[in-house]
Length: 135
Figure 1 (cartoon, rainbow, N blue to C red):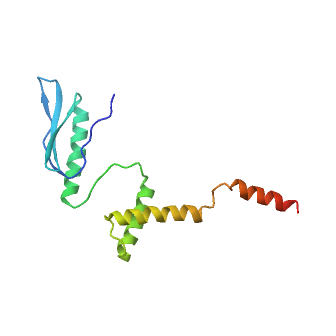
Figure 2: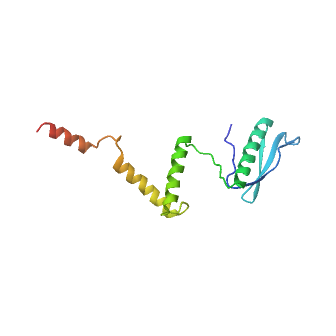
Figure 3: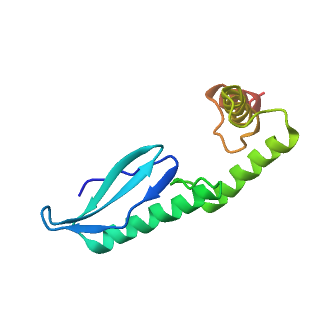
């Protein structure tokens, strides 16, 4: 079975699922970012589950919350939120700015380069240790 198309962005409205005898499937419509799209399913339960997800997202959008799917764990999300809150508190960087994205990536690269204790030593470092042990 293929992966379902999901609609991101601001969910403005969601219609109730209805069964189409003509096509033999359940469908409902989602208005996102000013565009209407249909979501279909052969299974009523699946249609209801998808409908509930879009309704929750719509209600979250009304409250100013953006719900998105992510592969991050809860702990990773909390760490990311803490990092963005710290940036916002300091006020040096604008969170939605392209310059900020570049600075963040450079900062992570700097951290990896300078503070990674778990990296394997380079060949030159190994040779240096080997040579110094015989002197």
